[in-house]
Length: 383
Length: 158
Image (cartoon, rainbow over all chains, first blue to last red):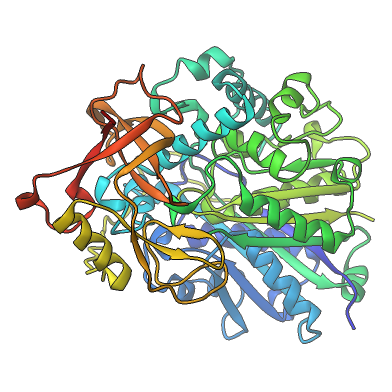
């Protein structure tokens, strides 16, 4: 019986606001080529393949049919997860745990710059009968959440703006990041109002890019590399799609996904065990709300922890040292892929100017964005 | 193979512009039809109730998502609720500015665990607060078509 599963190779294009020179399949090919070189195997030797993609964001019906070529999966066992990369990672983990697959490739990407009407496309995700006729943008749902979160936790807009300042600042150390900037809370508060309390700079802008990872069972991993990055915990869940029945203040999808991942990883005390975390900050307040849902602090404490510097690059629990979605760019279903990439680079000690010293356990958490209530968590280690 | 060739002129890359015209009918179903008929004919909201879980679903569902039992009991929950959360929206779907900002709110309808997401009418940004009691305002009966737009919004409770 297979005991453990590791990431043995990872590749990326990095992330950019636009990529007019390449097609999305060429983006993926670049990331895949790098991942296979990193893993020291060829796709012909890989047993199974998974892509994470979503038809309307790709601009294709049945977009999974377009996945094999650029990851080396033609006429091989392949499927697509209509969800985030971390959900695809969980599927790959399970394939290996069956014993029928020794190696599995997991791919995700964003070619957001191809979409001419992103808000409208995401607007199609609203309930067509109860919500869509109002023709509000998806950001309105985030605005509703933000108001309630701030009310329940006594958090201010200024405190949420500090998340943006931190993450865009962190992104300046990350060569993959598209939206690094040295800004102040005032810049955020004075940016254009979109759906108050959300301002333009509270919202992660979209970026293009691809990430491909190669997974292997324990024996294969140790034969391929001296530095496997082990998958210790995984969790994911989806809340009701009925917006009207939701609890607007709490990210229950993140809390329950984290509880599942902590249980699998044997982590009873997340604050004591987790060295650093990459968590979803698609909107500024989401980083704070998710910190609480992940039990990295108590409800209402996240903003204070941020202001104390504890979650900064040099703090005791660095959060989003990559720059997060606010600094790197929002990547649709590849959002989790970017977080896993950051964990792997940090845990290998390959993160360059943004390397956090002496890290052994990292947490990645993702949310599929408005109007979804799907969350996924992965815990990786280098031990 | 290394990828070494990169375009350096922004005018060089070419593309094809396409769109996906998608047209659907969305069936209301038993719960939706009952709900919208009540709005159209009586100007009130009907919810479904799961006594076992002590949950009242609005919009109504014919199944309880907690105990997974079928629900067939519709209850009239009236049209009064309170502001559970709100946002002030400035943008249209195409990214353009709205003629004037609008207050979108989640109204938790009294006696239910759900509610309605709609606009606040006759309430200014200065007046709106979480917990504010509000009441549904419907279009005149003859203009209602059986949809969420039969509701104009939610206004102050006299």
